[in-house]
Image (cartoon, rainbow, N blue to C red; front, top):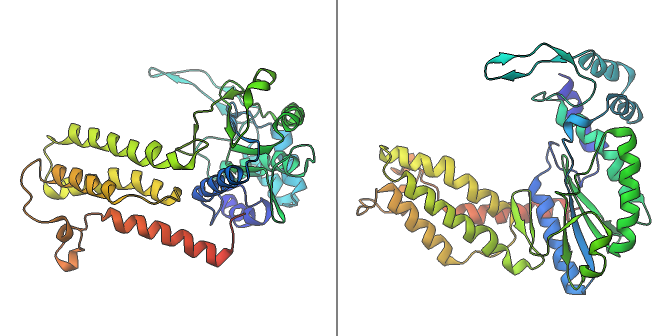
Amino acid sequence: MLSRRLESCLPLLVNPDQTGFIINRLSSNNLRRFFDIIHHANKNKIPSVAVSLDAEKAFDRVEWPYLFRVLEKFGLGTVFVNLIKSVYKSPKARIATNGITSSSFPLYRGNRQSCPISPHLFALAIEPLAEAIRTCPDIHGFEVGPQTHKLSLFADNLILFLTNPEHSFSHLQILLQCYSSFSGYKVNFDKSEILPLSVFDHHSIKHKFPFRWSPMGFTYLGIMVDGNLNNLYKLNLASLLQKVEGDLCKWMDLPLTLLGRINVIKMNVLPRFLYLFQSLPIPVPAAFFSSLDKLTRRFIWHGKTQRVSLDKLTLDYGQRGLNLPNFRMYYWAAQSRFLAQRFDNGPSP
């Protein structure tokens, strides 16, 4: 009940650049925005970086006095805040190790695991940090028209888009230290990564900041990204195609019926490619779909001659097909969905 009430308010309280666990917001919007910024940086030759911050046990480190104060400042009302406080009143936990359970011990901070309201509370808890970054004049983002693009969030996954990196870094560190002192938030600098964009030469300032520099790219929300958008196909779709080929070879001799093999394609292969189709704004060559069809055909018919064409198998049951996924249609549907969203809502935030 509390989760549903808070869920309906979050779009009004949390900036659109936070998409994690908020209704009608998608992680693919974060990725496409990231790609737009890379394109803008390269086109205009803007010395800049993308910083992926890794928070150390972000959900487990939230200080409750800070969380309750944030809820009050967001104006959620005394009754609602008191209900949240009652949920977090004197909780205890035990540790199970090899079937042996420890004695109970009290908890003093953190969002509860598997609790439906925890992601919503965390989105509110990290919003003051995000707003401080947005409004800090010494942390420079990308100026595109009337908008300034500095950061993008998916729950605790925070990425920053910074111009004038040396000046911005020093002020970012000060801000993070201040926020950590009262919220419990802690950046794991060894796992936080920086991707140089455009013409930026990072060697001159590399030694000044405790981040891991990744000029060859890093993984963001499951997508491998580097400073050259032309590499997106090779780093993601081509790479996944090789992994799927290996998986299907391993599963080839499983004792599955034709329907069972089609269900493997539906439940394992399709979701992996669909996420990439939804996230990557790139043209996919016809050779990719031909290779994917070949792998699908070989797996479904156990390496033997096909008895029914893929075109017929992709028809629905009412048309005497077996609902085998048509990857080309899923790709075009994903692109059409994004275009429709752009026309409905205008440019992404």
